[in-house]
Image 1 (cartoon, one colour):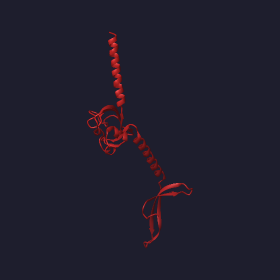
Image 2 (cartoon, helix red, strand yellow; image 1 turned 90 degrees about the vertical axis):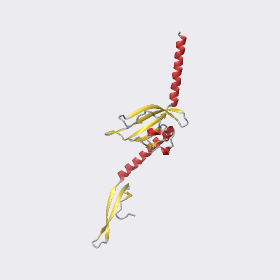
Image 3 (cartoon, helix red, strand yellow; image 1 turned 180 degrees about the horizontal axis):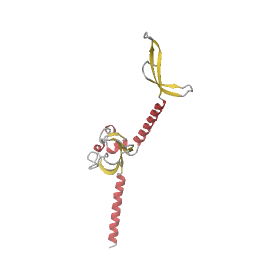
Image 4 (spheres, one colour; image 1 turned 135 degrees about the horizontal axis):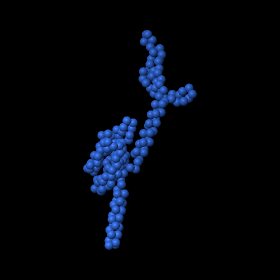
Length: 193
């Protein structure tokens, strides 16, 4: 039921049967005596904007699914460095409960662990580093940290993505390999004398 003077969105059908979305506004037409003698109406086709809205909703849904289920830790960060959104892998890596992360400056989430690690909103659009952190239980882990600011028309975005990947197994393997190479070189040096 249409209400007078109120814009309402309705799903209608065209003469050929196609569904369309429309914004409809009805205004009563009054006689000189003040009696309602009819209605004046305005109809605006909203089909394209509803289609764009549905597309944007599906795109956001796809982004959320990919972002939230990514195997690497990711956080969307604003220009002040505060976390807007973080996935479960990120919260697991930093040891924070998921509900406590949004709003925190991401560099403070690892307070005391980043040392002289610089903030990402300086003069670059991409930065990668390897950092060592200590878990709550005191165990040390190595993280590959990447901060990226996408370029948009007119410069850089006001947002960035922070990605973290636990590379502890690779770092430990590299250490073992270095030790084995050192031992081999020592052995060769001893034997050749």
